[in-house]
Image (cartoon, rainbow, N blue to C red):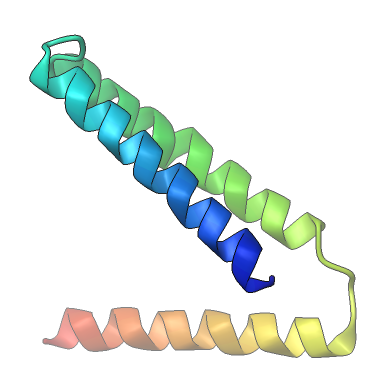
Length: 84
């Protein structure tokens, strides 16, 4: 990913953040709707994004090893945080 794509992604997320903030301040979205939208993002959006990320990459040995290292690191961090 080049720097321009990165900036576009960050700008898009920032605009969405501002829209959500304004919608909350103007009572367009109340606390119940906010919780439901958060649940939707966590339970449907995140898994779909993970699946898309995995399936959009070419299957190479290097990518497989990188994924394995990331998975092990994630488990390690979760175990460490659980111990703390």
